[in-house]
Image 1 (cartoon, rainbow, N blue to C red):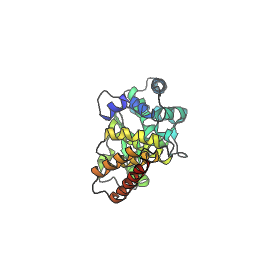
Image 2: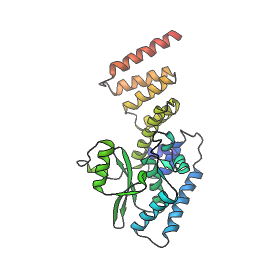
Image 3: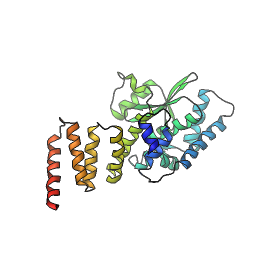
Image 4: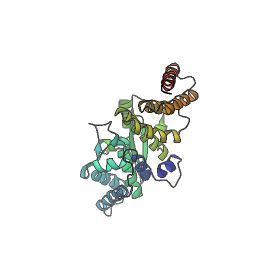
Length: 271
């Protein structure tokens, strides 16, 4: 997890692609990065070859969209949105299916290889990218076939998907860093594992989230729930206590105390 750890610390030398592949090893332990790095290289080379001598920003976006979403068939996984594989870069490259954010990572990393100014944009509920340079400023939606968007389209998208009005928050249309992208991906993966009742992998994902955001109370509560399902009761108690310490005024404080008491009684009955 060294690449993921470095990117979560926002180290300038860290790489998003390697960090995302580290994250994917939660789903596939021992996952080798080299084949998938080579696949990103091949995709970038295919776009470069198709462009030939064209160098304009418009030509890049046109060729990248055609190659990624038409020729290679990358698309948003509408039918199985909650599948954990949608959050894993290797699986997205293999299956050509993913979430908005993982498809955006593909776009970002291909563009980086071609030295193109493409940035991640963390809209509420829907991640997109932006091309901003060479006289072109446009938003691109990789989940919907590379659809081009302007500011008004982004405002409508956030309102339709997340019910959030971003007109008073222009910062939400500004680029986000690698740490933001990876934390959002980790949260997606955690949620997918809970929905699939894969509590061991949910706990492993939360280990990374807690290491990166040690004061985020909700992660301790989530890991406590996962550990309870795994019957790791001593560890669950520690996480519930950490949650109460970090969120002393939590609305579910009494419920959490009851859970702690139940675990304590159970541990006492088996000792």
